[in-house]
Image (cartoon, rainbow, N blue to C red; front, side, top):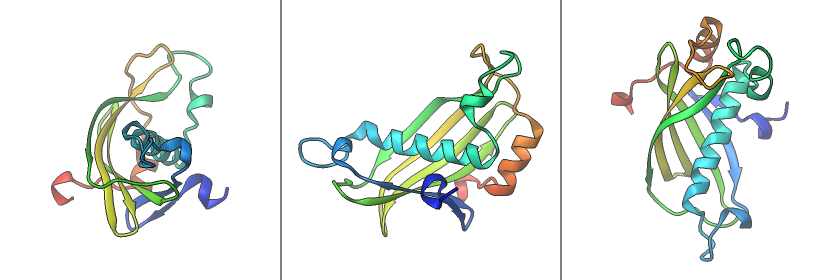
Length: 154
């Protein structure tokens, strides 16, 4: 699969490129605040894809065995505006993993400029929308790709 579709893992972080298009901006040609969350969602989806999780496939089948993720909480700080045509990079790290959740640290950069920073907790759900344990093999795969980094080190 091409790098542009999945991003790459480098120096302990998943790096996902995003180009800012007109549809991502407001009337001042700056990225509309909600779109930063969309960029981060795409990057997290690609991290899960690297772990072997395709949520569309995983959520089909027996509801109790299905596997999907939903955002439980998000703390987002805007640091600088991104603008039309900017090439951004969403950097994703794991900061904690539990039986039924993953905490991600996600930062958006334009070159050497930090644009936004977030801590996002996702919970593992079954096909009925109920919390469920993550499979051990998935946790192991995630740890092999993005080892847990303490937020205190960030």
